[in-house]
Image (cartoon, rainbow, N blue to C red; front, top):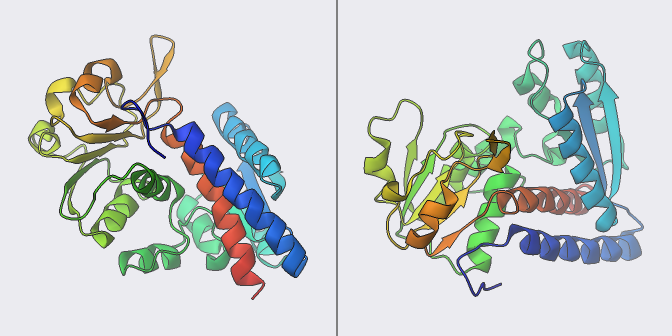
Length: 285
C-alpha cells in the first residue's frame, strides 16, 4: 500500500486487514464450522471506554466475527471480574477475550490480564505472551505495536539497522514496541518522563514513535529530516482531537507520518480482529 503523499492512511490499512479477516472467517466457517468469537468486558460506564467497545464491535460486524459485550457495574469487585473472565476462558465458542482499560481504580488491571487464558488474550497483555514477545516469539502481542509494524511493512519502511526512538514506556505500547523493533534489528531508544533532554534522542530517530498523550509534545525542531513518525497519542486541545506530534509543523520535515485521528487507532482495532481469527485457528487445532 503506497501513498502518493506523506500520510500513512490507517483507515485504508485497517479496511484491508478487516477484509483479510473476513476472508479468513469465511474459510474457517466452511472448513471447521467455527465462527471466531470475541468477548469484551467493560467495567463501569466511562464514556470513552464505551465508545472504544462500540468501535470494536462494529469492526467485528464488518468482518463477520461474533462479538459479545459483557458489562459489570463500576463497583464490581476483583473476584466478580475474575469469575467472569474464567467463565469466558471455559467457553469453546469464545476464542478471544478483551478487558477494556482503564479499569476503575479499585481494580487490579494486571491481575485481570493474568486471569485471561494466554491463548485467548486478544490484547497480548498476559505475562506469558509478553514473555514470548521478549524472546522473539510473536504470537498474541499488543495490538497497537503490531499495527505499527504492519504499517511499516505496507509502506516499505526499512527497520533493520535504523535508529528507532519510542517516547513513552507503557506496557501497552512503549515496551512491546521496543521488543518488536529489536526483533527486527533496529537500534532502539526508549524515552519517558524521566528522560533528560528528549530532543537529543528524537533528532537522531529514523523512526519516531510517540505514545504519551501529551498534546503537541513533538515539535518540528525535534524531528530528523526524512524521519518516519507514528503518533499514538490522542488528547483534546482547544476542542480538537490532537496527537503527541505538532502535525502541521512537523509534516514538512518527515517522509511518512500518521495523522490523528485516522492513523494508528483504526489499525489497532483491525489487529484485534486478526488475533480473534488466529486464536480460533489455534484453539480448534
